[in-house]
Amino acid sequence: MNGDYQILAFCCQYCAYAAADLAGGLRLQYPPQVKIIQIPCTGKMDVLYALQAFEEGADAVMVAGCLPGDCHFLEGNYNAVRRVERVKHILQAIGLQPERIKMFHISSSMASRFVSAVEEMCSIVKELGPNPLRIDPKVVSEEKGDESE
Ligand code: FES
Image 1: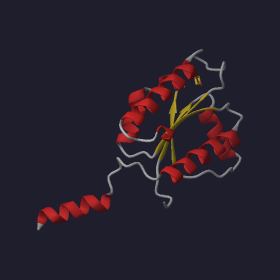
Image 2 (image 1 turned 180 degrees about the horizontal axis):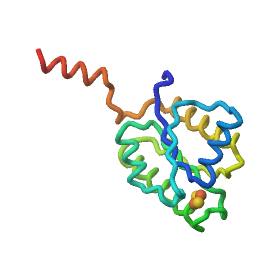
Image 3 (image 1 turned 120 degrees about the vertical axis):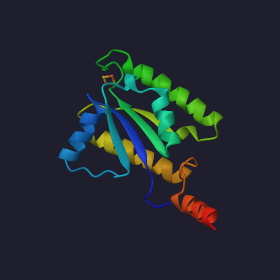
Image 4 (image 1 turned 90 degrees about the vertical axis):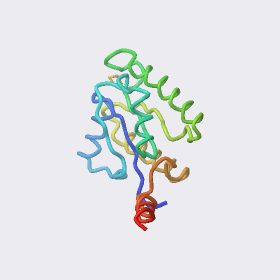
């Protein structure tokens, strides 16, 4: 598998997003395949957001929130843990590997932890291969070519 994969990271603005920002400020390198989505709290991360990400071809989804007990909305990160577990069950039921989604707890000062979390997700994707739901553009163009004949 080449570097052509996509990881979506739902990051709480108070912690993991700030840690990603700090990693950038410290010039820590992390794989560019991760796309960060800033959310007000991981409690805002809905099961449907993750499923839609997979449906649209994401190879993995990481959810990164405040440390246990540090959520600014008290239980948002605990709700996120439950939702990630629910997504894992759904993925398993539809034939995708549940390892494709994972919850992390990262404080705003843990820049290197953010980097290692991204690297961990990258190695999981490399091991599992691409999301089978992702449409291969070559196949689509070949199919279109077949139709025009
Ligand atoms: Fe960070 Fe809730 S405010 S996870």
